[in-house]
Length: 180
Image 1 (cartoon, rainbow, N blue to C red):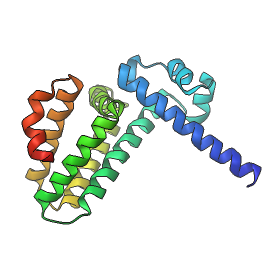
Image 2 (image 1 turned 120 degrees about the vertical axis):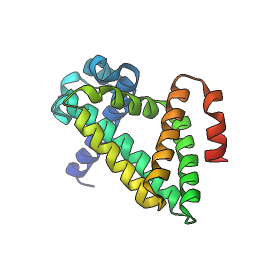
Image 3 (image 1 turned 180 degrees about the vertical axis):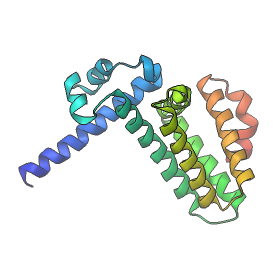
Image 4 (image 1 turned 90 degrees about the vertical axis):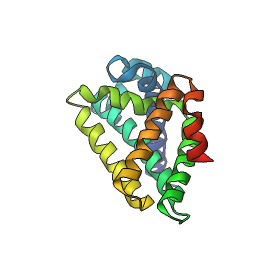
């Protein structure tokens, strides 16, 4: 392995560590209150190194948000690959989502912080584009209609809120139906 390749892999690993730390910080504090100093400390790097990877806090937040959306997209598309009718595919996507949010609370909270930051003109349009893209990917992967997919996302939003508030009993009937 060449020195350049080792350095490249090392910077990719470091970038992932920064994104992990940023996910936690943004999930916990939101976009505006999150601190790049805290992110650097969590990642075990100097604060200036963050700016070597990302030009500013906005780009770091958007990269973190995009990574979370990509994880959702990949899980949904993979879950739909098993075939079946749209209802069955959406059911499997719901099961995959339940696993994701139970495995990584920070991703769930980051998703909600993205929606909360949507009023910021520098963040909102990017979050909206990502959400619209995810909606259309689920529409295509499920083969369902817009109403079915809208209902899927509506249930997901209820699950997000009740999970974040630690009120699982409210969404339990939906989780039972959505994930069997």
